[in-house]
Length: 283
Image 1 (cartoon, rainbow, N blue to C red):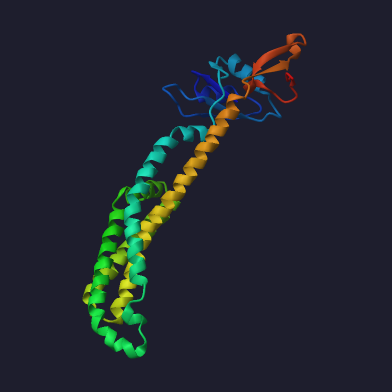
Image 2: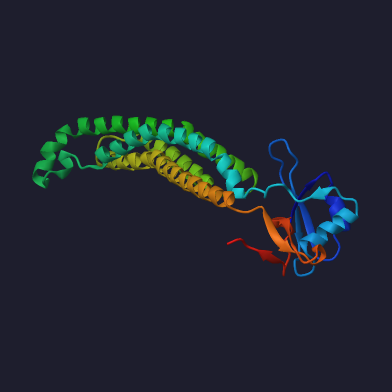
């Protein structure tokens, strides 16, 4: 049962009586005070009898003129702004993810001296130093792209969301994404620095592949998760739009046959319907 008025929840608790369980103050909206959400056992007391108790105790309450909005509709009101924020974060991660992914593909592909037969490998190894130097430069570019993604709107979105979640001791998906991208970016940067201390050879080649692999993970992960969030938001908006259409067709009053009304049907708000009420439904 939802009620509006100037009475405090404490006044309703004092006059609830049998069947009354609790009353909650709903958040305010549009500068108006929030509705009072009364929880009761319909097997013990009806909505009209409960309202009569409140009025007899001098409480200033009455059924609302319109039904309260569903929580998903309240979320839909902010969905457009949230979608804009995610869209900007998604676009900021596209370029770094593309650069890091291309570098990963190039570095992971075998070089000519690596793919050559054993007999020709020694001859091809003469040009391997320049080949590896070029790959070191590519890995440095991947490191720049990875940290650019981490410091962009995409990275800040997950870092801010994770910080808010941890303040409430909640381990959400955003916390996992922020943690994984932080670890992979730092580890990839460490491997990149090790590449400068390693002499040319097979070990350097393996270090370059590992560094490119970890550096590409962060921007690509940010891009993929943000893409999933965009799809989820659009699905929520479609659901909220469908619920709005259903609520628009929902009646706000019912024709109820009341014994105290001489046996005729009277209009009552839906909030005041009780068990065993006889209602007239127009054809």
